[in-house]
Length: 474
Image 1 (cartoon, rainbow, N blue to C red):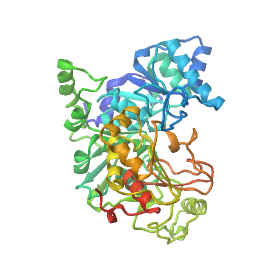
Image 2: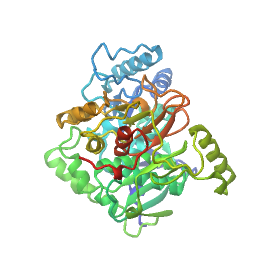
Image 3: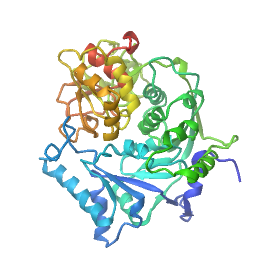
Image 4: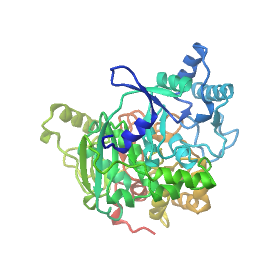
């Protein structure tokens, strides 16, 4: 057999059969996660055809997009007064009860954002294929798995058959040499990559991350990296499993135990690309050249180092990109050549499936301890899961956030996608640890600057976009 990449090995192991000469295959999927937002149409279509869920034990459901994140969570505060949102939640519960699917509902101590819950539960394991109705399912590549988002019709097919019609993608390897400087995180790395290759630079590809910086990176950083790979249009992202991952997974609720764990790890160690495997594209980054980054525009690829300036569209040769830059500057109310350092903000938000895990909260808390949120700034921190929140409180992080003036809220997608009460108003400017800065993403007319959680903390206490390297952490 010819040399294969890790992605190709996983796809080959899950191929049921080729589908004629179409270039497509029937792909077996190991597990999936459902949410209240993208599953109702799939269940409705399934029921219209008189079908059942073929393997309920392979499915986990969570409520994450529309639930309230009020600081106090109980049966009263979780009542949804918006009829459409309430219907989405009740419909998910009804569908799960009908088909015997496990559900982490709003008051479950394991509730949280699906991409956070899946990894902390050990629901996704090395070598698996994972699909879900959310584009950021690429997150699970940090588990040494293949994860990708699917649409409602595909969710229906998956529920009915545990398979998908799938077209294998090309292979891209991103090698990151060197060690990242102090203050630089996985968020800065992936934002630098997206700026370098463009918002469509990985279209039709699955990215494999490799190199010294990746080996030294913690698993939660890798989750951030794989999560935001979709913002370069990647159809998946993956990091080969190693001891760091095995240590992260060991003892989690859904992983093998005892002798089965030992046998699984022995198999997982073989999950890597062959030494002479050929990649369709190779991208090289030097971690030592990176700096904390921030976006200036309305696409994740429109970003620069915090000590940089807003670029001038007049210097862009591509007419389509130039037009996009001009529109972005008008929406963001910025001028070419304007410095981002010192740009005033009205809001600071730490959360989302990209940056709401315990390491993210620890990073932010280091800059908040002993400081206060600047006057006129509303600051929120929304943990990625109820378990993350509980751990943060046990470590004293919740108190640090509250004493600094942050709202210490309950788990959910929250202001990342603004499908509940957590949203910005027109003209608000937010330092945000989320994944997308599209027009209206956090509220109609709202302006979003993407950055790491620690950078959000620095902006919150200074009241402006700030280079965290200028602020000593505690």
